[in-house]
Image (cartoon, rainbow, N blue to C red):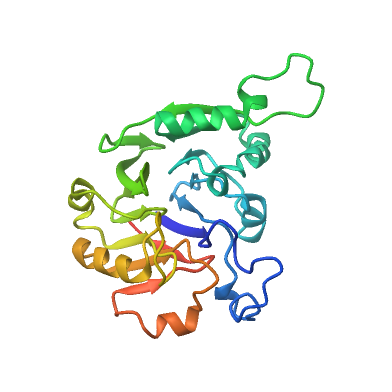
Length: 258
C-alpha cells in the first residue's frame, strides 16, 4: 500500500492567482501546491481517494490515476468536495457507483451541494451524472474497504468535527486545530503521519507549523509530513528549520505503508 499526496495546498492552492510573493513566483515545483487530497494505492491496483479536491481532474491527469474505487471524506468544505463531479470519469471505466464514506453531517452537506446528483431533475437531458453512494461512518469504528481496514478518528477543525484516517502504519490528519486525546492514542504506533501545518502564523481552525511539530512529538511517528500549506511557506527555507522527524509534504510524494 502507498499513500500518494495528490495535493498539499490550502484552499486557494499555491500559487495564488494575482499574487507576486516569493513563493507564488517560485520556480521550485515543491512550492506549487494543488488543493489537498490523497490517494491510497493498493497492491491490487485499486485506489481509495481521500477527499475530492477542486483540482481532482488535474491531479488525476498529472499522476496517471486511472481508477478510483472508493472515497473517504474528511469533511465537506469546498476545497475537499468540489472535485466530486469529476468522479463520473471513473464511473465510465469502473461501470459501477463509487462509494463515499464520511460523517453523516458531511454527507448531508454533499447531498445538498450536489443536489442535481442525488435528487436529479427527471427532465434532465445532459450526460451521465456522477454515480456515488453515500455511506455514513463513525469515528473509532473501523471499516473495511476493498479488503483494507481503515480506522476513522476525530479531529477538531475549529469548532467543527472532521475525520482523519489510519490505514496500517500510515495516518492522514488534515484540516485540524486540535486532536482529541482519544485520537492521539489511536495514532500511537504509526510510522508515517500526514498532518495539517498551514503556516507559522496563528489560525483559528488550522495547526501552525510549530503546533504541528508539538503534536507530532506526542504521537511519535517515525516521520511526519505537513500538508495544507499556504503561500507563506517556502519549501526549501522551511525544510531547513524543521526537526529531523518532520518534513513538508509536496504534490506527488509517495509514502510506503503496510
